[in-house]
Each structure stands twice: as C-alpha cells, then as structure tokens.
Image (cartoon, rainbow, N blue to C red; front, side, top):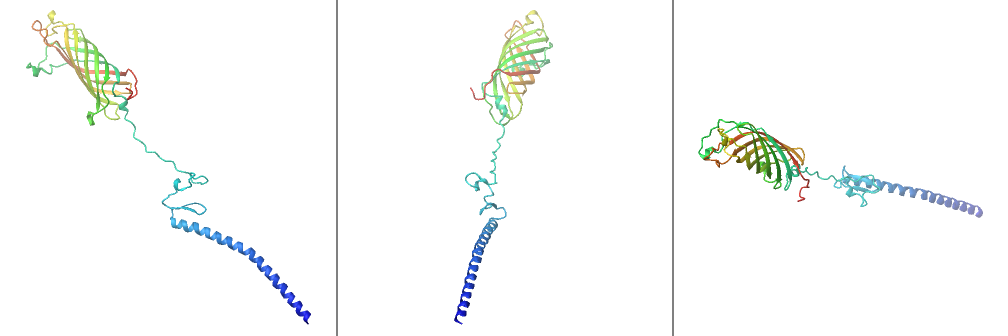
Length: 302
C-alpha cells in the first residue's frame, strides 16, 4: 500500500515537473513575441500620433523623426550634413534678378572721342533771323543760294549722362573743318573752321537720342561783290554760324548715324562796308551724318 502511494506521488511529481517545464517553454516563446508586438505598436503610434500633431503637411523623414509644418520640409530641417542619406534633396536658392544695365551709359560718357562726317543740302532761303534786333527789315534778297556743306568733325564728350527726365543727357565739344559747294548763287565755294557744342538728350534704354547743336566759325568765300555782282558777298573773309537739331541713332557704342535740319549763316559782319555792302547768306535744309568712335575705353577707365 505504501509502495503504491509512493508511485502515485512520484507520477504526480513528474507531471508537475513536465507541466512546469512546458509552461516555462511556452512563456519563453510568448514573452519575446509580446514584447516585439508591444514595441512595434508603440513605434507605429509614435509616428501616427506625431504626424497627426504636426498636421497634414508634416514630413516623416524616417524612423521617429517628424518635421512640423513650420519646417515645411526645408533642407535646413534635415541633418547638419546637408541631408546625407535622405531622399529629400536640398532646394536651390533663387537669386533675385537685377534689372538690366542702361546701355546708353556705354555710348555717352566722359572723354569719349568720335569722328563724324556730315553732309547737307540747304536750298531754303530765309531772312536773317536776328534782323528784328538790328532794326533791319525782315526781307529776302533777290539773289537765292543753295549750299552743300560737307563737315568733318571731332566730337569730345565732356561729361557722363546727367540731369533728370527729358533733360537727361550729356554735352560734347565739336571741332570742325568744312567745305561747302555753292551750286546756286554768285559764289562757288566756301571753306570754314568751326567750333561748337552739342546737347544730346538721352532717354534710358533708347538707341535714338535727339540733339541740338550750335557752331560758330571763320571762313573764306570767293566773294563776287567786289566784282560788281549785286547782292553777292562783299569780301572773302567771313564769319559763319550753324544751328541744328535732329536725332542720332546708335547701332553700338562705336557706330551711329544722325539726321536733322541745319540752318547756316554766312556774313562778314559789315567789315566790307562802306566799299561793298554786306548781304550775307541764310539757308537751311536737311543734313545726315555718321559717327565713329576713335578709341575704345571701358567706362570709368579715365
């Protein structure tokens, strides 16, 4: 009887040991799985909860990192190494586009030197415009003239572009030598040396620029008054005055053309009187010309 009891106890003890071992084995398998599931749940919750808190524009960069809407997924919100290892590429900074420079400042500038050649056809005779100030009658003489001046000039720009609005522009000093053919009139030719000023009115970003100029000079004409020709010039030595206006068109800083009207006056200022009368010549008409830069300098190099 006692032996049977001992066998029962031993069997129960073995069953308890086997059950305990099985229980520990099951726990050994389930505990890591539960831990892994719990860890994955938390990580997923962290991402979803963080992105929800950051808003609909949030960026999930990987792992637990979430960028708020203020960061706006900008490269600055990435790692300090410029986003290495991330699929987000840094954006390029767009520089502000500055307005283009005014090319007229490369055409009209201080100490620019140009050569110009102008030719005109002046067939329109008028009274001397300043007769009213001298007390003379404002009348035309019976003898009509047509002058064809050919003028070679050096133009020296005295300053850079200045002055506001419609007065914007610069000045150039003009030194000229001219030959004038006289196809109609008592005389046949005229030589002169002239000096003057031209004002260039230069709008911004325009190739065309209006101008006005004034030139005064000394000249020699083959006077026919001493030969008895009525209303001809009284002596060879004369003074001359030219007043013109027009438009200059610049193809480049080096080449330009011009076209306008020019009034030309020739007179000896009554030096031939009382022997010979001083009638003078007053004509105007169109003139055209070409301007060529003689030397190249970068602006501000002088």
